[in-house]
Length: 489
Ligand SMILES: *[C@@H]1O[C@H](CO)[C@@H](O)[C@H](O)[C@H]1NC(C)=O
Ligand SMILES: *[C@@H]1O[C@H](CO)[C@@H](O)[C@H](O)[C@H]1NC(C)=O
Image (cartoon, rainbow, N blue to C red; front, side):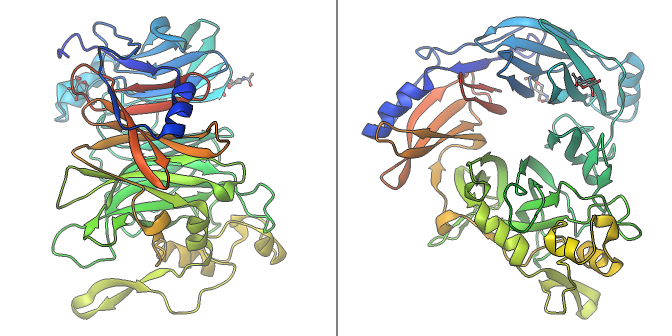
């Protein structure tokens, strides 16, 4: 792909279900589909590049795409067909200011990184806007899309830097974002905006040089006997504070907050009172393979939320860098760690060094970091604003759980040498034998898509599809339940 007439390549992969049923039954060995013999649709536009984000609208059969300085609406049935587009540039003054502050000219553009549906007529969109992150509303009127042009500075909602990893989610009119809050990229934040603004404390024990990869909601309030709240889960890699090590040791984390959190009244005012995190363990027990860097995650939802599974792609910080692992984490395990597990706490050892160890003291009640549930309500705490300072101080100082979230079976469900996995989506299908199968679709850094499924207890790659002619990383994968699915570099 040539640098200047950057081409976008969006691919719709064919007749998924049929193929799948056949392969489930036979457990057929790996089949490779190359770029030329696959029936892949591509969207390209001269002058357009950096197609960073996708949003599927099944109701209107539209695929929205955020790119550099522009957004596109494509026909979901044939993504090579553009329905409409809208330019969104950083002003010349903004670009000059960005360059003056020492940033590379090519990064001083408007990279549109976030696209969220608000309702049938409005999307919420955010771009880096030459290191001046900005969000706006996009109005959809049948085949016409246009920006409302009522943009405002939106730090904490969208990265300043186009290459920085981030995660976001829009639920019930509230916008959750995990990114950096400043120009230098030194202040990480998990923010809720648009409604009931709340943010994380700026403390290394909360977030320590994190690289965010994923965020999603689990509707835990559904038929919940404890009257518990829905929770937003986020995934990131960060520098560990709890291990002593001569070098920076990275750890993968799962963190969560409660949807109904309103912050504290004095302590943790406008801050999350329910931010708790734990480490994710993805390793091969009989070897010393520790997959400590999470690259992407996908939540496979089940009818009963307790049966839902997070699938994650992991790589190693040291050792064999060309091995990727896929680990699965059950909601049950996640829930157990956060609702029953011990906390870690800091203790000062010699040379006034801080060590994080399991907290053995008395934990106040209601359980710090828990959502407002029946127990809290029965104790007279109807919102987080009612919680006593003692509880809030505890959760502020003990955001890390002692127990790790271990993967299903205590090992990866898939290990792959020679491929660096970048993105994952998972579908659950019913085979002709009436059994259900989890089918993994994993994108690689050289433009391939691997389709893997469980055959007789072992996950294996049944198909490998070359998505792009040149070896470009797969940067985004979206599942469309009716159409097969889309991917992009
Ligand atoms: C959709 O959301 C926009 C932006 O919040 C709002 O102005 C508009 O009234 C909403 N439309 C409907 C039909 O709810
Ligand atoms: C934008 O695309 C160009 C060309 O593919 C690539 O070199 C550059 O790294 C991309 N920038 C970002 C911020 O993704």
